[in-house]
Structure formats: structure tokens, C-alpha cells
Image (cartoon, rainbow, N blue to C red; front, side, top):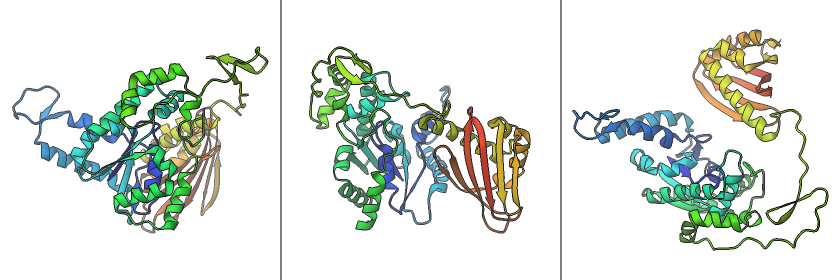
Length: 400
């Protein structure tokens, strides 16, 4: 196992893309938070004192047996994500920076890779998110707590990677990462991984540049003071230079249309792009359709006809294409019946790859066949009023 982690907005997904760019590293998609939110609470339900202890909400277990059983469980859940050629399986969750004590107990042989980024850039990016902390001070505290927890519980096979150094020498950093893992990588592979790593994904909507030191263009003295109060000492320990924000521009002239004054700085008001409909902006669309896709597959896998129908818009368009021809449905009940009638959904899943996009979200699903080879289901979804408005399903495999 490879566990990749760091404070939120430190580049954990970027690091994961680099790691899994190597053909011998498989990946667990998305962020599981398995050990912080799942395994830690589980282990806390046990104690290692006297068997007859009257401790409430805990039961006795031998520590080594408990850890063996926990690892067996984790192995069984993680094994389906491996590939035949993979030596490693990489999982990334920012919150696992606070769970290295648990990870180290269950997987003492795992590789731990901690990516650290200038806390001011992290706090700026984190506070800019709608789901982020209320301000720079709270974001700085979040960064400090994650970094300190990870460093305090680092295992024997632990590597710290600096975001800034990796970005400054991407090809060299990729080679060093692979060498630390004992993976061979020729120039062609490193160059290809570097190209993929430079693709701008998971951008900050308020400053999408791939760069370091972006805090300088956004922090004033008030924001810097808030950060310094919460995390200035750790920033200095890590060797980041103390700096001041860029000097403000000359005072703006009298307010003119399209300009406004905030915090002593003159900033241009940017026009807002009109959306086709609520929920169809890129971020909102992807969040909605990702949820719909996950819920649809869960209902199909369990054969929940009513649940499938509830996810479909009243004016849904369902199109099913297979070897026998094409069928079209426009009523939720009939569409749900047609979808659930396909028994492939209830067979073991061999592959399930989402491909986020706008306006269509696609899924490539592979299932065990009924004796004549595996079967594929390719789905394209588009939302409407937070339900599935358009769904195309392409079926290939055994005859139906």
C-alpha cells in the first residue's frame, strides 16, 4: 500500500496522479477517509485490558488479533482495486494525515507520502472554497493540525514531498518518487507522467493558475496576521521564508462604473457568466450528476425499481441500445422497469470507471457474464432539475 496525504488543498490529488501514472501503481479512486472515519472508530470499540472488564461500549480483544482481523478486512475491500501488473495500490485522503497512527498499526509495511505546501497558499485556497473554513485563521489552523499530526505519527517508510520543489523540478521529482518506491522509469514514462501532471485539474475558481506564492496577490496585512497567529511558528520550522504581501497599488481615483473599493485596494468587477439553468455551471453540474450517477448505480445493483424511478425526471429520455436494436422510454416508471430488468446489474462488477464531463457524465461498467464472457454497460447521463433528464445505455456482451 501507498498512502498519499496532506492538508487539504496541498496537492494530494496531483500527487496521486503522479504516483498512479506509473503502470505498476494501481489506484483507489477518490478520497476514502477509511482509516480516519472508519477504522479508527472501529478500533475504539475494543480494549485490551481484562476480559471481564465492565467497560461500556467496548469489548475485549487481543491487540494483535484485532489488527490482523482489521487488516484482513481492509485487504479484502482494497484488493478489487489492484491490477495484474501492479506492485502497489495507492490511496489518497487528506484526512489520513491525522490517521497515521491507525494506518501504521494496520499497515506497518505501507509507504506513506506526505505532501506539504506553503501554508499561506493552502489557507488562501481553502478559505476561497464555498465548503471551506470561515476565514484565513481557521484555514491556517486546519493546515497546521494536519501537518503536525502527520509528522508526529510518521512511520518508518515515510517521505515528505514539498509541493514547491516538485513543481519547480517536475521531471526530477517524479524520478525521485519512483526511485524511493523502487520503481523503474525511463525518460519516456517520466515525460508522459509530467505532461499529465501539468494538466490543470481541481483548480481554484478564484485563481486557477498552477503556481506557488499565490497568497501574495490575495493576502493583505490582516490575512497575514491571522495566518501568523495560528501557524506562523510551523511555517518557520518548515523553512518557508517570512514575507510581506505585495504593496497595494496607488490609491484609486474617484469611483467609476465597474470599479469598487474594498480593503483599500481597487479591483475590477468581473462580469458574471450566465448559466443555461441553475445547477449547470461546471462545478454545480458535476456535483449533481456525480451524485445522481452514484445513486443510480446503487439502486440498479440492488434491484430497487422504485428507487430508480425516483431518480428520473418526469420528462426523462431513456435510450437503450444493444445487439437487438434500440428502445426509447419517456416515462419514469416504464424507464425504471426497462433498466431494472437487465440482470447484469446484479452480477459481480469487474470494472466501474466514471468519466466526469459537462454536459454529459459517462460511466463504463463491466460485469461478469452469464457464461459467454463479460458484459459492458456504457451510460451517459445529463441532469435536469437535480434528477436524471437524459440517460443513454449501451449494452454489449451476451445475448439478452
